[in-house]
Length: 81
Image (cartoon, rainbow, N blue to C red; front, side, top):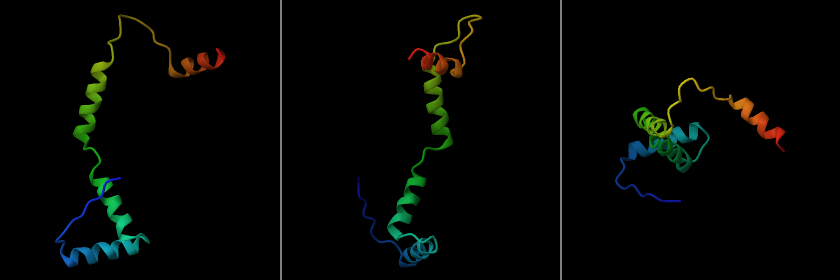
């Protein structure tokens, strides 16, 4: 796990963050960890771009081909055991 040191944070900001953490019955460290985790989540545009990359890897359907449903594939796999 990485560590980050942030210097020169305004005292009022630190106090507000401590109060918020206490209200949530969490440590300041845990509260900040959660805030940073949330802030680092991919944006909608990043998620859509990733979806398009994945979609581009999927071969196109061929004509009138009928593909089995996921349930059928699972059932087939279970029956094969």
